[in-house]
View 1 (cartoon, helix red, strand yellow):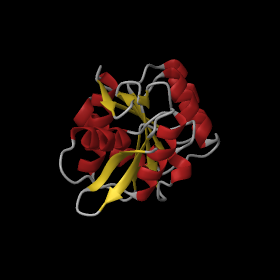
View 2 (tube, helix red, strand yellow; view 1 turned 180 degrees about the horizontal axis):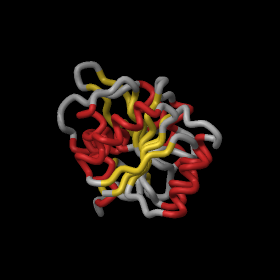
View 3 (cartoon, one colour; view 1 turned 180 degrees about the vertical axis):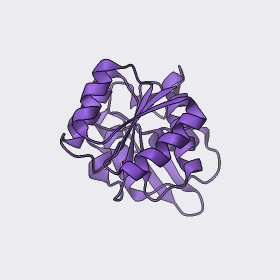
View 4 (cartoon, one colour; view 1 turned 45 degrees about the vertical axis):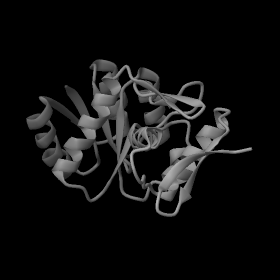
Length: 197
């Protein structure tokens, strides 16, 4: 797997670049947005990891370009991931909050790579989830975490927990896709789909 890691901190680049190379084979590093744009035109990457404070190019522009090229992207975030971030048109496949461990980093890369290779589609109430396309069919893009939450709820596998930002964003995305289903919290049962009248 060929990964591009972009962050303004050279120590972080060296440390995480080494971890990614040892685990996945090939990691190229960049320290600003213009380098990212140049490198994605010169090379074929299987995934890009972007620090949320990457200078010189608007973050949403970079994510939009990567989405357009079909390259999965993980954002290394230094602030909480809010509903406004999760409902942007330029959405990353995953958001990994600092501080994180090397194991959390490699697990996130494996999870996003696995979903990018999947041909799975599964029903969620009156909607259909396209795992490889990271979206509700006919609707908005989804993060890897949102896909996992929807899958757990569709399987009815015990109590499902999630953070309010993820659930709020999912409800907005379901509504935009024309679904009559909303996700509500039920005491002792966690989050579950409920059909609105």
